[in-house]
Length: 453
Image 1: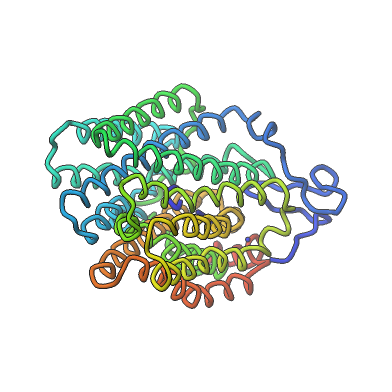
Image 2: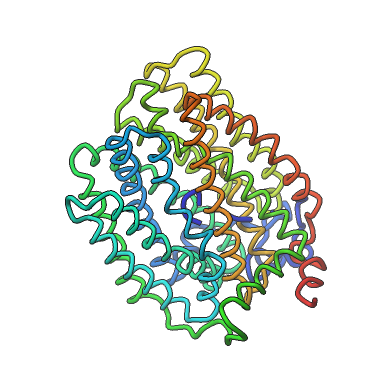
């Protein structure tokens, strides 16, 4: 999931019984280590899957372009208006289409050939961003075009996520998820830093680069993906199929718990990004400082994701979700209080960067949660389920950024940062309890009973 992009897992599942990881299974005789846990796949095994390479490469390319364009637009709006609320609105506006059309548009990933959905969405985004890159474009027009660009995201992200689970199996899917999450953060770091530098030169250049990344992505995907038929015949209207995905999630306790952790954790873990510009200003930094602060969290996710993907056995990853979620929020509270009460100068930026980096280490909880999500979702419903999950994810991130901007109109940005961490740890506790209690039902009777209803 891009942007904060995330997804889906309790007690170790011993490989003496079939180990469900992604859409397929691995048995003890073929894919376990000496301890009895599933053996992590190697990166060579993952990249040996031909279709994974374009899915991975285009995701990395377009994500970097997206982030540098987002920084450019956010800083541009703040410079023109000097309003934390409008800057936060710019950061949040790309998330709102998920609320408006996410569950509906994501059904296209189950109704149409997924490779066509990917190519069409990237082609449209390249054209729209080329328009946004025209120098002197009025701010309201820019924001309107940004909204249209964002409407292409729900079908694309749902199709990409579902296709990843189609082309990869077993521990290769788990390692690919970890690798994709890590490289997403690398792309975000690069995009944030380059975007902060480009804003001082020409914001239109950042938008033009983003347009090029989507054009290259569309060509690469068109040339390298297999022409698969649609995963299933349409059984009703878009509205009916979207409702089916919602019903599946609503009647499955495991899915509800997974999505609750995802949405609440992301709401409070990412909301502070909406006040990154005023936070940097409070510390005495300029536009480059915005990119530096925003880069700290994804840099931490890079390290955390590598450790999870390559060093932690599959059955043990879920055990880390609860402590990692808390680790992602606690440094926000500490950092906000430190800046508010002790030192509000740019000299304290290294301490805040370190705390945001630690928060990023905790944010690697998205990797095992994502794998649990796939385990709990039947293949025929995967596109719609991803659409619902990501729609809510982007929705809460957008609302969180907007709420942070509103709060920053009357409270220092550092105070908003502290609130995100402190309130977040309290709010996410019920979801984490439910998540642990539903362990073991991800591929069992909970899902089977739900799909029979």
